[in-house]
Image (tube, rainbow, N blue to C red; front, side, top):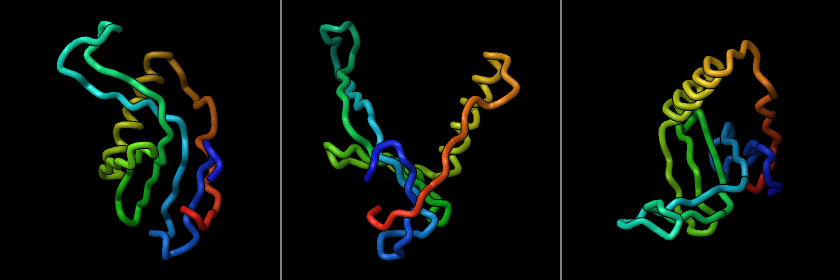
Length: 111
């Protein structure tokens, strides 16, 4: 799977046909009980992540490829928080138009 490209599932054996997926860079944060040398109570490291979503299942998930841990939430909640962030940003910047296209999903069988 090519990074930073959105793929749509085209094989029902791999999941819902409206499922989309993106592989991208991610930062994993591990919270600690005491402050680290950086002065913060957490450690961070880079990893790869698979981000996926499906209206049919109503889920949005992020999987840390290195640890093989996935967190999933309701798609509705993910969309609401993204919309709120975009709205807050537009208000803060005084923007009236979007800066770039969100992208288009492309069919791919190996989701």
